Image (cartoon, rainbow, N blue to C red; front, side, top):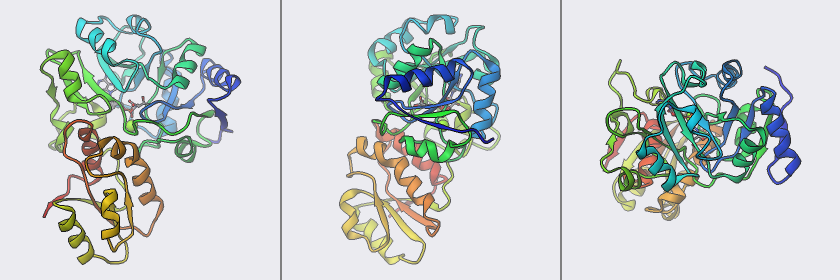
Length: 342
Ligand code: TXA
Ligand code: MG
């Protein structure tokens, strides 16, 4: 793969049009959304969608989210648009929520990775909406990272991973939420949360009533078990360094890390812990400030990966409630479920 990737700016109308034209012609474009950058292509063309998997190095059995720019655009993509889904759309779209429904025939098996369902999302980012409207197509877009890397939360991250592999990156500034959308399936008997994100479990329950939480959201899937959301079965993001989550007070954490200080040891800490630590550290927000933690998590993990000297990261992680559940879900995987309670 050696494409000449164009750098486009969402602030320029002609660049939005350029992105839309590339997409209409079967191209791949990095698009900003409010969650993370996505790698977009025409969701209705299986041949084009195949190129997404190649560019990312993504396993073929991991289905893609289809992005729309209005609620009306959903009906032709699904067999049914049940009342629960419409209520969710009304409450949280446009926004960081993906809803899984039985798919219509126009969704190619490449997009759904062979499943009878399709994931749909109406993103809030104005540039994503403008491009979808300008090309008039539903866009399949996984996160725009190389498979196995943290999702990109800036156009520069996306460029770093995808330059030469796709047609363009549209710069729309840093993503507001910073972790990928909440994924909920309404294709089964009861609503089930498959991936926590910017819309919290509590927010889903407020609209739907009881919502099951898939086993894989907070736990390691037992060997050989099939994941309801295929993305959950992959070791989602494996950093170069070993990551261990440390639970306890800030004082206990600092004492532990400082007594284990050595070359290659680093810390992913809360902001107020920085001055207490005697190892290289990256803070990603204040304790309890789950919005900041979500916003900064992937940037911080990328920074550790870029420093090849870092071999072991002692990390702080919020409790799995509210938006903290999304941060916990990503970080516990990055840590291979290694947790030390002090
Ligand atoms: O915020 C986001 O959702 C970003 C932006 C670009 O919109 N996209 C994103 O896509 O995170 P991706 O491909 O990295 O994650 C999609 C997740 C995967 O875990 C996938 O397995 C799951 O959604 N998924 C997609 N379609 C599904 C389906 N039909 N059934 C079950 N899970 C599905
Ligand atoms: Mg992804």
